Image (cartoon, rainbow, N blue to C red; front, side, top):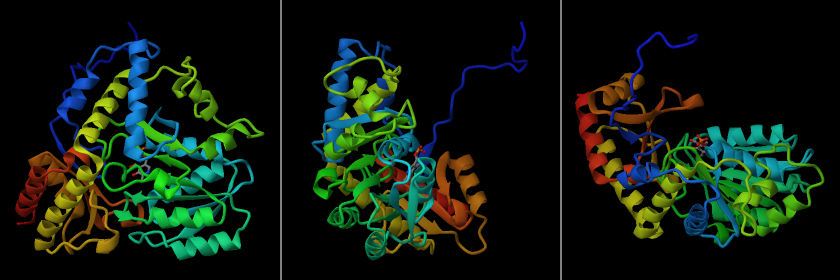
Length: 377
Ligand code: PLP
């Protein structure tokens, strides 16, 4: 038969790594075991009941009463796209904050929706500056949306989402907030902060398999999307169509939902609920402080000032004269430990130590510090 591979291929068994990079994070055996349960139909009444529980647990994670809260089938980038493609019409002005890689991707999204991005730049490693945002809004009174990344994974910086949303609302703008790296690791309060559209991802502090993007939309957004004159420029991500499956009134076929991945997310969210959000945030903070204390004994310096540091994403500057890539290679080879490298302008200049979700535990911090001790020796 044609095209049969000539190389002998056998079952793929990945090594058991410890994931301390920018995501994915380690996955708890409970979540992995949920994945292997029998696949059932995406309209099976038992599955449909599970979907309602999933939505309720996502509302808890996002701290919102938003009716429209569900996991989109696709990674965090799809969560980003669903927000822009539904909310931005051709010609719409969007204030976009860029202080790292992912703000840059938001600009791309606005352009691809034929919107007009007004970019507010801050240095990589700095949070979004609320004064600059307010100036940009004053200079662009016709702007409709403010978009920013809450937790910039490329630099490990946390921006003040509450203040930024408050400014946006004072001037009548809607908000799109990226909480891919923040959800589950630091407070995200969608209703209290008045976020209109918020997306995250399954593989960071929720510690589920990659490939799902929890999203939540305020009633204002849902109304706005309903009133659109032009069709949404993506069939798959058209919110109104997706709600024929994820909404409350109907459950009809939209696309074949990734059932087993959704069991896994259900289990990951259940574990978050059992621990409690406050305790999860405190665990990230505690382990960050331990990791920081250890890293500083090697003379490593953080990229971000202490007041803006993300506990779950620790970016430190590479030591002078040290081969950045070789350190990561040895940690992976000798200790099965994955660290993150710098992206864009920070390539070769920083290491990124992620302690997200199930990866955020003291034994990982100790493993990492002991492994570094031998690599730096
Ligand atoms: N936004 C942020 C802040 C991220 O860190 C990432 C991924 O790391 C994304 C968006 C894109 O998510 P994904 O890689 O799951 O598509």
